[in-house]
Image (tube, rainbow, N blue to C red):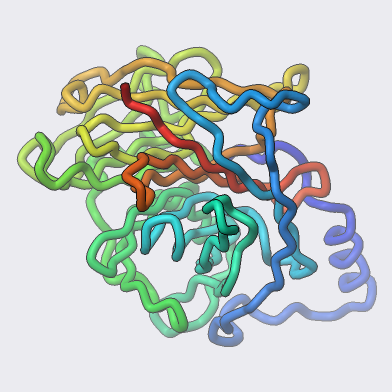
Length: 342
């Protein structure tokens, strides 16, 4: 994950004061992780395009969204999430080394109005002590199946499995072979996407990993099917200046990718691209159409996490969250869309 702006001045001041008072910081593994219960304030987002009542953006229809904040410093940096129950209970990871859990609260029309029962806890080592170092806890990608979370980390590149125990998350169960040669993974451009393919599709429920911007010699993005009958490395076509920040498989077998761009002149951009499922094969170059693209004229920020789920009426939903980098200049957003497949 590329940091868009520096951390807030307040933290720098606090660090300087501690140093000037000659206070020795506690070791990172000084105590086990506690479950935090930050209070989340939320403001509804009624329109996706700023100043417009438009709701339809290509095949995507905006349903609603939230801007969120908390007085708890640890809240934020939300880099990936998955629903444990469709549209309600969720689990996620922050790239600051935290797990988070919660529930999307809704009004009588079904639109999101806030996050309830929100908790956070730091990742721990085999002894149950807080790890703390950014290098070892830069969690970016997440997939969940059968009570086990698969997490992708960058910097210290790895893909790890964890048993989901929301009140007491433990060390990983094991690390998985991600197949892509480690020397091909850029330090801050590792696995942002981990997704389970459709269990009855051509990939038979295999886990697929896609890097953010680790490029081969042709400028395409390294990815891999890390298990199953079609196990192997492939690449995703890089189109324009967008990098991949998350992805989830659609019911028909295609892979929906969330992509982000950033430049000083244009600010941030968000894009959704549908990758043809049949193009996800060892040695292949996977690609597909762009479904939607948004710039600073829309309610977006550093969009990093995404999930796909079915609403009670059968609508196929796409939810996305942003990573605020703990910056005063960025926002924590949650957005929902209906994906029309006609």
